[in-house]
Image (cartoon, rainbow, N blue to C red):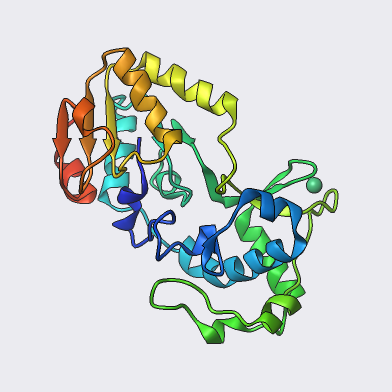
Length: 255
Ligand SMILES: [Zn+2]
């Protein structure tokens, strides 16, 4: 199971941390699922900022930790990979036996009909609808946030679902939303089939991931944790390593 710590080494800020996190935020506060679903102005502000940040966010590449896990899968040594990240870096590294617990920024979901479309295609629709809109001039703040004026936000045109006209949302779990029960059940089953659990780059503060530690403990599976700094489950781990993921994982020979 991987968390934000594996992706910070690819240059992606921890989107749940206080000062950074372009993608889960609108203005200075984390975006709330209920606000997004209920309010067209909230969606407009969110998508305007997301449009500006997308070229940089989508350009991030996997680091040696992502490649190591993908390699283990290819060798038949990794049963299932669960990530709390929404950046698609495991997919870019070739991992296939993968559950994205909190969804993925590279997919867009229609809130009405449920159709999934690639985020890259939406960027082109944004550009067609907003040919003269140039918030890029404002650039990124030092903490990765985007400055937009009220005028810029209000003039930004947001497309709707091309199938049904419904509102579009990134296919990610915002604050105030929960992971779908069938997805949680699926991961519980994979944990039950496993002979051990390795946590990489997560402090396990978020319950959606922590619950699988509890399942592993119930099954008396050995738990290993690789994370810089303490985690919520250090006392349950047979092995705890404080190290950079991209430096340590490639050193492990799974054979
Ligand atoms: Zn739709």
